[in-house]
Length: 44
Image (cartoon, rainbow, N blue to C red):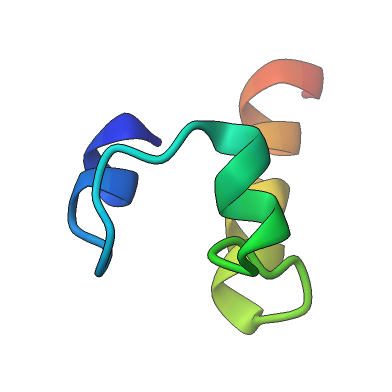
C-alpha cells in the first residue's frame, strides 16, 4: 500500500487521508479482485 500511495499525485499521504481523498475506491474491479485474493490467501 505504501508503494502504491507513493505513486499518486501527492505521494506520502497516510491511509486515512488517502481514503478521504478517494485514492482508494472499493467499487473498482481491481479492488474486488484484490479482496478475493486476500480471502483466498487467508481464509481458504
